[in-house]
Length: 355
Image (cartoon, rainbow, N blue to C red; front, side, top):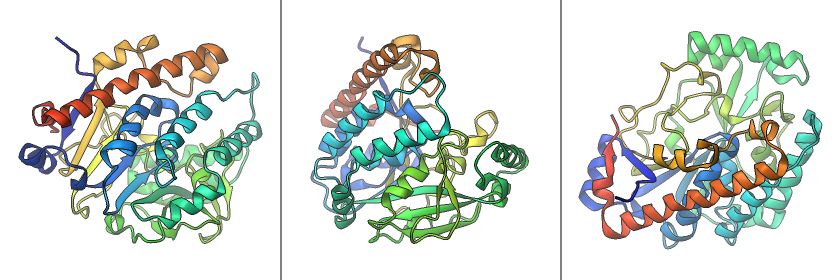
């Protein structure tokens, strides 16, 4: 019996819709992508299928919501050849090399170099001038000690982590969620979010790349981005701080939400990783289609795990590159399986109710 490399769980509303009509590209109104560094490599096959096939003939706008690596993945969409752009991103990301003990400056310089090669200025214009794929990227605007660079920033991180442990809403005392959005979008799906201070900034040629860099600026690892044009003055950092895997109200989305994810669990914010009682479920997201690798898929990977940032320290450059390349290649099995299930209508049977 062939293995299922992909698991699909859906909230009640999404499950019933799939049972009625299968999975159709025009039923999806929002595509989501989470933070997680190189964990996204196993999803690149799905990205190639979605960007280049599944959504190929879609005409009405598709909203994209990403933080950190999720927003970077989606920066392929709207470019002249999104599949080629995604392939370029995975090649640039996987081939990064650093000195034995890289500092913040070295890592930041590498991130800027990668960004400018992956998203040239001409492609920024292409992304903003089209309306089929509407980008929304979340960035955290920092307050107090979380806004400073150097060791004092750690005090701010510890304080915000402690506050978050007591009440996730208290993160709003340390960070403001800023949603940079496509100029032709009102980000209507997020206007009811009241869990923490949230503001909105239209994307432009002047701020697109700065916002994209900021949403991936991991505290204490990559320097924050200051004073982004069009946004309130201040220091901006990784959007995963507030919205790591998301725990937001999606009831304003008219259609369905498609969420390919590398993890079986949905961790709301960066500081919730060890708070195992704080997870998002299908009960809270009735209109979400949640796609994840199966346990069999993960066990088939080298080392029996998906890539992560610790690989930079644990593996030499060539070993890491070979491992990540294999993870990308094997991830394409999930895409092949999804394509087959949609084409044969097996998607109805394969989709399980997300409780």
